[in-house]
Amino acid sequence: MGPCTTSGGGLWPPSARRALSCASRTSTVSFNHPAGTCRAGEGEGAVVDALLRVHGVAGLRVAGASVMPSLPRGNIHGPTVMIGERAAELLR
Image 1: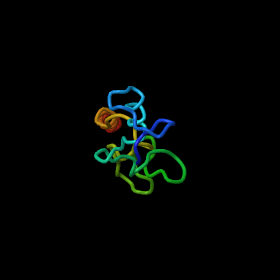
Image 2: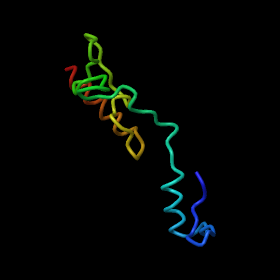
Image 3: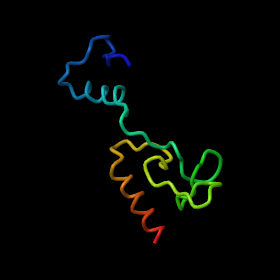
């Protein structure tokens, strides 16, 4: 990931709104929020169904960030809690 530059080749000043916008588009990554390793859905690539049941394994469900089909742009804590709440409802 290289620096964000103007058309003239110079670096934008750190306080410039445009520089911050460029940096946020090119430099943001998520190393601490793994998700999507056990994708929910139907079809190829899906590991669990909409009821969080693992395909082909009776009696096993997965309720966590791993069932998210893709990583959200924000923190995954809230969506993960909601997945757990939904799983609790399914088990009642």
